[in-house]
Every structure is written in C-alpha cells, then in structure tokens.
Amino acid sequence: MDSENLISLLFVLDSSPQSDASLAFFNSFIEQLIDCMAEKAALTVFYPEFSDKEEHFSLSITQMPKYRRMVTYIPTRLESFSETYLNEKMEGVFSFILKEDHFDTIHIWSLKNHSFNYPAIAKERGIPVVYTFCDGFLFSNSIFEKGLGENGEKVRVSNFVNSSVTSFVRRLFSAVKPKPRSYWFENIGRFSRYYNRTSESGIDPEVFEERAGIADEVISFCDKFVFFSELEYNLFYRPLIPESKVAFMEQGIMRELDFWNRPFEIEGAVKFCFTGEILPEEGIFELVEAFNILYSEGFRNELHVYGETHENSPYFSRLKQRVKSPDIFFHGSIQGGRINAALNTADVLIVPAKWMRSDTFLVNNAVSERKALIVSGRNALAEKVRKSGRGIILDEVTPRAIADAVSELERNRKRLYYFMRVTDDFRVPDINENCEALNSLYGEIAKNYKEADPLLLARKLNRRRKERQQRG
Image 1 (cartoon, one colour):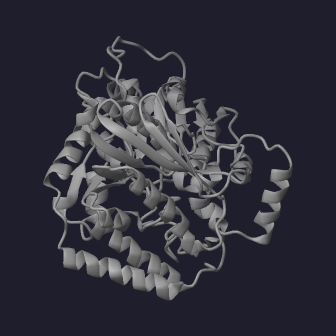
Image 2 (image 1 turned 30 degrees about the vertical axis):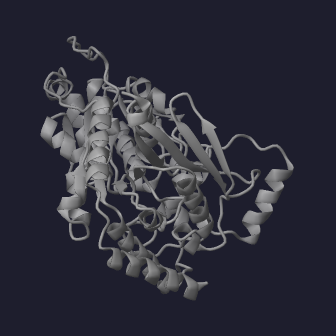
C-alpha cells in the first residue's frame, strides 16, 4: 500500500514495548502487534520512561526502522496522588504531540503514567479515540477502592507520591552510577496490596470521588472500546459502556508454520510451571503451599517459577521462607521473546490468579506448545480452557484445590494427554489477524467519524476547565 494512503495512527502505551515490566506479558503482545501494525499504518508510538537523570517531561523523538517513537521522561514519584490521573505536565506533552502532527486515530492502550484528560484533549482536536481495557488502572478494583480486599482491609497509595525518603534515595542514586533498572515496582509492584497494606488510606475521600468522576468522563470522550474478554465486559463494564461502542478482540500470537503434533509420552513425574508476577494477587503463595502439601504426600512433581525476584525481594523473601519442597525452583524473570522457551521446561502451565485476568496471550502460547493448563475461574483464561477443553479450572484458589488438580494430572495420564492433544481443533488468532481487525476498526471510525453534539461537547470541556481552575 502507498504510504500516503496509510492511516496515521498514534499508540499510547504505559511503558516501552521492549520493557519486561508489564503485567501478564502485555508488552510481549504489544511489541509483536506494533511490528505488524507498522506495515499497515503510519504508526507513532508514545510512552513514558521513568528517569531521574533526564529532564522530566521532555520529549525525545526517534524514527525507528518501521515506526516513529516518542518518549517522555517522568519521575518515579509524583508530588501528589492526584497527578496519577490528572497530570498537567503530561497533558502538555500530549497536546504538543497532537499539534506537531495530524493523526487519523488515537489508540490508548493504557492511561497508567499518563492523564485521564487525554481523550478530552483529542476531542478538542477532532480526533477519534479508541481505548483498550488491558489493565485495571482506569476503573481499578484493587488499590484505588478503600476497603476492597479479601478481608476488607484498607490500602494506602503513598508509594506513588514523593517523600523526604524517596527524594533522598533519588539524590543518592543520581550521585553514583546506578545499575540498570527494570522499573518493575513502578509498573506492577506498587499496584499490589502487599506493597500498600496499612490501616489508613492516607488519601481524602474527595480525591477518590474526583478520580471516579473523571474516569467516568473518559467513557464519554472515547469513540470505541476494545476488550480482550466478553466476560470482563459483562461483569464490570456493561452498565458503563453501551454495547454499540464495544469491540472484542482476543490476543493473537506469532504462530509457527507447523505445530508440534507428534505423539509423545511423558517419562517420569509431570512437570509444572508458573509464569507471571510473584505477588499475592497471582496466587503464588497458595501455589507454593500446594506443592509443599504434595511433597508431604509423596509426590515429586517439579514446579518451575518464572517471575521477578530481585526487585520484588520484599515479597519474594517472605515467600521463599514458606518453601518446604526441594522440587520448587525459582528462575527469575524471563524476556518476552523467551516465553515459549520457559513453557517448554514443563508439561503444565498453572495460572492461579486471584485478580481479574483478561489476557489470553500466555495461554494461547501455552496451548500452541501443547501444554495442559490449570487456571483459576471467572476470568478470560477460564473461558478459554472451558471452550477448548485444555485443562482444569479451579473452583477456588486454595493450596488444597491446587494440590488436588496437580495430583489428578499426575495420576490420570490419559486425561493429561487429552489436554495436551494435537492443536488441529484449537482456534487461536494470529497476531496478523489482530492487526487486520484493528486496522479495519480504525478505518471505519475515521470514515464514519462524526463530532458529538458540538454544544454538548463544548459544555463538557468548559465544565472541565472551570473545575480545574477551582482546584488550581
């Protein structure tokens, strides 16, 4: 296609697509998607990077071989929690980007590390906006809701905010040459209840109310919403977003030309692996306890754990103390391109997540490598297993439930081999199909885009300006 006829597209991401610090291997998926989309659109990718050396909120523009990259540098801590959802400096950068170039469509993959005002700013420019619910940041059901936890415990959010301690540490590290950081904590760790446990929230209720109200306004300023999971939409978002503004897209993978479909038989004990975040929300504590139980009952099944351990040392140290089985091995984090290599160290992938998972990227890769699955229920992963018949769905995430599922697959090899059967009947989208679907969606929106009632839009934007002036 002639480059002049390509749609001009802006991707807004929460971090570099080459970074390992993304929940549920999202960056692995987005990196493959970008590589494909760059062949079908004039693509610009905009994301922040944490840095205490570069000038904050400056913009670096680089022409990559296939797409243009725009990076702005942000501090690891902000002056107030409000800046996590209303950040005027990030809005200034975003406005500059829109002034410098014309975009037919803006696709926001996450507003984490950005500002909720982006869709409104795009509307002022007359640019349609697509938003993908690939994380829980906009309408978070974890740390942003007081009293919402397994035991109703309150949480704090001070780990987003600057303090005398964080300022001192930053100055200390800037004085010496620090080792390379993955910023795992900033992107993932600080969203865990483990790193936010306290008796008080430390934030005025009015701030949470303001955040919720502005999050609701994001809905009105976006033209289309992409969900990876119909279940997630039906459970959490149907009352907020009309079905006419929703599109569903399962995460595709980079499929091999030929699947591994030869017969096989596992010699020795069945091997299991966990690949994800070493956090309470991922069910890793229950998983370790399950393999302790199995060891005490005479099972010698290996568990291979892949996940961040160095920068996650506070929780990892606590978890490691609970290990009693010598058959549990921690391998540290893996690069996105090495997912299948990690999966192939075992026969079964276990995903006992306790928070809502809408991703299927990891599961699709696992089944394509002929791995059986054990997953928690009521999420997109369970949907996939239920429809494909490729594993066991846990009714509850407890050590006993996980241990029973593991022992079932060890004892019942016939059932295990059925879960690991050839992939001829397994329908998984290719990453190229994702690109085609999105490109079609962008074209449809750009072609049929009609400005909302100008008077209504002007009123919304004017009200927003007045509220910000009052807060100022």
